Length: 423
Ligand code: SAH
Image (cartoon, rainbow, N blue to C red):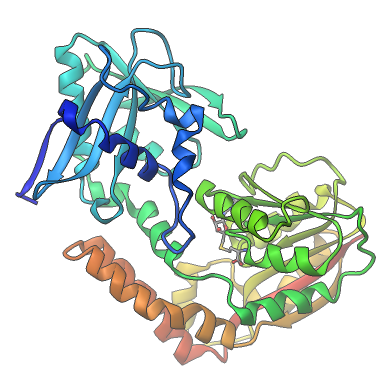
């Protein structure tokens, strides 16, 4: 990292900000790239338009002559605008250089420049569920307000007081980036293989009474592989909800590519705090995601969004046997503590106010061919990209351990679909 230089941006370098603006938009690498023109949307382009004005201030990270990161501030009426004395910050690092503390080094450098210029504070806006919130807090930002962007996403407005001495200034960068790293890794892996397509169809075969007027929610939809299968094989309109804006972007792009955007829409949202209406849906779907809220809690809390007689279809990690070896029991306790036997899960479904309609175990190939197999090459590429990064190495080791556990103990557990009908 010694060859890396952090310095103020030079006027002849301003044009590179277009590229950094583009890279500031989160997007899993396995996705089709965003159209370049997206940066020219007025509410995005405002962050760099005519950069070089009196209040504009920027810092870049240069690695062997190549600019690999940029952070800049402007006083503009954008999402994080507070007042005419508070510059708003934007940060962007090229994909291969993330997670190496370049971001915090650039930001500190920029804070110094802002102090020299007499600014008292600087602001930014960040999506509420973006893990970077924690990173900004470590750099001294405090949440001071909330706003909504043009697409209806909820953001925090955060302000850093530049006069205050930073306490706890030393950043444990790797921990700050853990969530980002995991997300980056999984965005390389194709979630939804063709084997899963059959599983979605099988679960769908138990749902009765859907019509063109039906409303379906797909919670924790990810990039929407299974949502697409639903849209192409069931009537009605589907709303996909996921935490990650990048996944939702791909979701909506795919819907548009297949010209099905009128029937499936993705929105950013938290499954623990959904803004749906009571009795809005005929069907609630959730594949491989309900564990994020917990099987029982999800079934209970989401029930109110279903019409009477509506269906819920969720898949969840389950034990196949009453007893199992201690090694796998302990492992599961750590990674998916909500795992329970199929009969207990069915009882939980019944207790939550549903008639259990069907239960089936996902075929082994869903794991071996569609989940673990594609990861082999991804892991190698990921390790190369994060060479020397201990946290990345440990993360991949744990992923490999998970696969080893599955190979050894797959007779005892696996993903299971549960379909119920609201009483
Ligand atoms: N259903 C998809 C994705 C499953 S992965 C598939 O089967 O391919 C789990 C998904 O849940 C991820 O996309 C993750 O972003 C999302 N998720 C995790 N916590 C969430 C929350 N609190 N609210 C909404 N989505 C969440």
